[in-house]
Structures are given as structure tokens and as C-alpha cells.
Length: 370
Ligand code: FAD
Ligand code: UDP
Image (cartoon, rainbow, N blue to C red):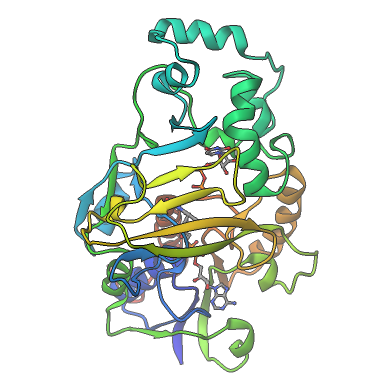
């Protein structure tokens, strides 16, 4: 008999397991249907001895000091600022689009002020910015949209950017300066010894038991527990009773090549050519040195594990129906990217889990605690 059952050992489940065990002194059983903890942030050493991310590149960045302070209890950090290049018209150019991107693409020598004017001439006025196409064409114009965004987005999501909520391409800014960092958050770093090591330390508590390769659907009637936290897909929890919520999946092709380095930065995007969206070379993220190097190619797909909620109005409406079912279950807490159908980054999931813990504390005061 456990006080709590937590389904899913990713960020959402692991943060809550740690908080409940250490702050409430209650027993927790955390299960995952995969054979490892860490959820999509899981990393491991491959056959060549290189630390890779099994589910594609995970770069930690946040403006939340509280989130950094919390995770720093379980890991030291390696400073790392992410830079990405996009292969466009045969060149490797900085993305987000910045001053150097435009000067190199068109063989120009514009200043920042001149680039403002360049964009102003090209941008298309849009009355109300609703879609992912609107975001980009109203900022940099149609030609750059087609070179950098249209093809990548169609591959990644399987639909045209005009069919996706503005939130998707709004993740990528446009700059008129030379800042070529992918993120501008105040804290950007990688867990010094990897994500999995950090998760191991979070879950290392006598009140926490871990069961892997255990699917909630198969054992839900056999386990005895008082309360439940669910971090898997919310539509699955409710037996898809309103139909399937769309999630986009990826096929990851991991390769090791017999050369010390492969590409100039950790991630190169392919918006115009190839079936994959991007190639990641992990040594840039981890600082590891080795005579070989390991890469991941990402091929988007409709089938496979659910990775990305698809931000579209009709999906949001369907999610709202599941959210209403979830809200009616006062014995279950739904947390994380899949259970709340949100395109959240890791730090946002940690923030959501810490906020959920505060709600649990308010709803269920621990007897005897001050
Ligand atoms: P998950 O990590 O998905 O964990 C949920 C767990 O629940 C899974 O392990 C699953 O196996 C388990 N589960 C589900 N259903 C069941 C069930 N029925 N029974 C048992 N177990 C179940 N974020 C960033 O901040 N920076 C990045 O660079 C970044 N890159 C990303 C790249 C890719 C390719 C992807 C897919 C995501 C990326 N993210 C990134 C987002 C990040 O992965 C998520 O924000 C975070 O991992 C979500 O944590 P979670 O606990 O909500 O979900
Ligand atoms: N995007 C694009 N071209 C790029 C980079 C991003 O079209 O070179 C679009 C694409 O729709 C992508 C979205 O911007 O899904 C968000 O990009 P991000 O790098 O944040 O995606 P993630 O790392 O979450 O997969």
C-alpha cells in the first residue's frame, strides 16, 4: 500500500515524487512503461562511450531562478549556450535569423538599422496574427519564411504553418543584431553529469520505489494506493472517450561516425532538403572529448510515442473536454507535457510540478506538520 502512485518518471513525475517523499514523508511508487527514468530527457552512454540523448537534444534554459535553485540540489552544471545553423541555399546560416544570416545569405553588408528597413520592405501586414505562417511573414516576409520556416514546419508537424497556432513559430525570434544564440534566457547550462544522473539523485529517497517497464493500463487495478499523479497522455487516461488527441512523434536515428567532429555546432537544421529536420552532435552539448562522435537524425512521424502536442484550435477544443474530465477527478493530479497537452519546455514542466506540489500541500495538509 502506497500513499501515492505516480505514473511517469520524467520531469513532472520525478519532481513530485521527490517533493512528496522529502517534504511530506509519504511513500511513493513511481512507475514508467519505459525501461528507464528521466522521460524524454533521458541520456545514456552509447556503444562508442559518448553521452547521447535517446529522445533528441535536450538543452536546459530558464529565466526561473526558483527552478534553477531546485534542480541545483541534484546536479552541478556545465555552462552551455546553444547555437543552431540552418542549411539554406547550400550555406550553413545562423537561426534565429539575425544580421549575419541576412548578410551571408544575400552577400550584403547591412547594418542593424539597414536590416530593420530590409525587413520593413518585405514584411506582409497581417490584421490579426493567428497562425505560425502569420508570425513569420509579418516579421521577415514571404521569401525568408519559405527558406527557413515553411519546409521545416511542414516536415516537423505534417501540416502547413498556416494550419498551426502562432505559438509554434513564435518560439523563434528574429534579430537585427548579431546575437546568434538560440535562447536568451538568464540561465543556460547542461547538467554536468547528464540528466539521468540528476534524476537518479532526485529519486534516491527511502520513501520512493521505482518500477520500470510497468504500464499503468496493465496494473491499475492491481496496485493499492491512496492518491494518483498522472503524467502520461490525458486522452489515454480517459480511454480516448472523446477520440484521440493528436500528438506528433519522431523517429530517432542514432549514428556514430569515425571522426572527431562532424558539424560546427550542436544542431544543424534542414528546412529545405532531406527527410529529417535536424542533426544533433552531442559532444558540443556535453564537452566530451573522444576520437569518434555520435549524432542523432530526427525524422518526424504521425505514428510512434507521443512527443509533441499539436497546437491547433481544434485540438485545444478537444483537450478542453478532457481537461473538464480531469478537473472532476479530485483524487488525481494531472501534470506535465502530455497530461496537460502543453508544448512545454523542461523548465516549464518543473515549474508546473512545483506549483502542483504547493496545491497538494494546500489541499492535503500533513497531519502534525507546522
Ligand atoms: P515525459 O518526459 O514525456 O515523461 C512522461 C513519462 O510518462 C514517460 O517516460 C512515459 O513513458 C511515461 N508514461 C506515459 N504513459 C504511461 C503509462 N500509461 N504507464 C506508465 N508510464 C507512462 N525541453 C527543453 O527545455 N529543452 C529542449 O532542448 C527540449 N528538447 C526537446 C526535444 C525533443 C525531441 C522533445 C520531444 C522534447 C524536448 N523538450 C525540450 C521538451 C521536454 O522533453 C519536456 O518538456 C519534458 O521532458 C516533459 O516532461 P514530462 O514529465 O511532462 O513528460
Ligand atoms: N522552426 C522552423 N525552422 C527552424 C527552426 C524552427 O520552421 O529552423 C519552427 C518549426 O515549426 C519548429 C518551431 O519553429 O517546430 C519551434 O522550433 P524549436 O526549435 O523550438 O522546436 P523544438 O526544439 O521544440 O522541436
